[in-house]
Image 1 (cartoon, rainbow, N blue to C red):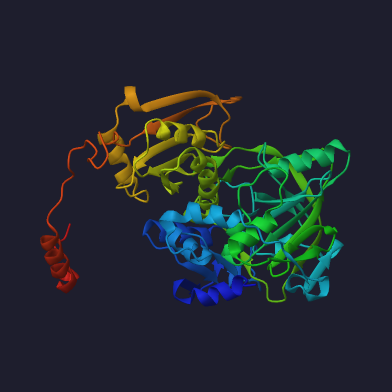
Image 2 (cartoon, rainbow, N blue to C red):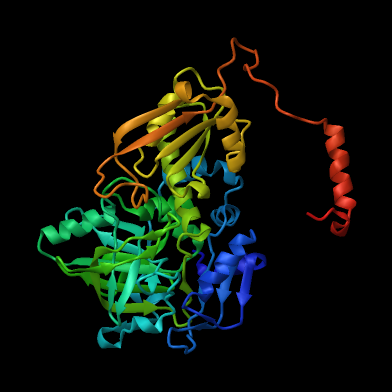
Length: 471
């Protein structure tokens, strides 16, 4: 099984190694912001991070692992990023059970710190944005288990450092981890939690598959990866909570019944600061890691944060919509829409089929707006989708509002206390052809002939950029 360090070897050309010391107090994240503004998305390896007190950390920071769709698609072995949804859904539907690795053989157990020896302040956990409550674990795969079925669940959720052996843990309301926590507390028992950090991005992405409850992610993730994922018992919980044997770091602990502390503000995937809330607390019992561990961080609210989960959403939406619409050819959850918008692409749909598909897509809790377009529209180009909306639909005929649906988590547009939401479906597809073999009724798009385009490309290929007119 490949791990984080083998991936950086594979992606050498796309890795930027930063030797200059960078503070965990905003400097690493600021670099990600500047790279994104310039349209550059390399993996960033910070060799010498500085802790909050200014001392060097012996543990490097790796970030931007999933900062672009193309980077993430390559890590997953996807030949066509535009058709990721169908392929990921197919892989997840062919599960491969995990492989067992004994405690002594697991790389993540090479160093074990327990009890008073644990100090989260020695890890280069970042405080990313102005306004963040504190230092947040952002790439921690929080693993809990349903006490009744014994089925585990994995989700990346924000965890704020509140002391040497204390974290807040914020499972979004209604999430599977939140259900597991509530079930433990309903029994009057503390909830076990293991947070694993750092792995090959295809494992990190695969374990974010959107599944039913209760349903373990490990077999579905194995299907996406294409091989069994090696798992090892956690130090505190043994076989009850398994963690990847090849991870970099694992933080283990208990959520005591009913104990909550302030969590947030925090920079969320919405692109705005998430408000402060009362969150459960993890009392840390143990930290295990590799001897030469690397710390994986995700830039909250940046592409690095959204791309992997958006890919997982696409696979889930494909599985929801395709049974109702055989003409569906692609699904895209764009970064521009955060996790609230989805684009659906169709090839010659029958009457009514697009509307059925849009309704199915809006049944997915996270989606607030669904837009349907034809096959000639590039789903990866927001401008092309908006062009279709502007030229192929009318609001009175092709826009449908559906009231009373469940709403996406952390939606900043919702009024306080809102229980349901109104969602929007937009059918920007062309009318069907009037008969077999006939073209669809539409006005031809602007186009120059292929010979002229070839000549223009040749001129630009030969020209030096200094010859181009300055804006």
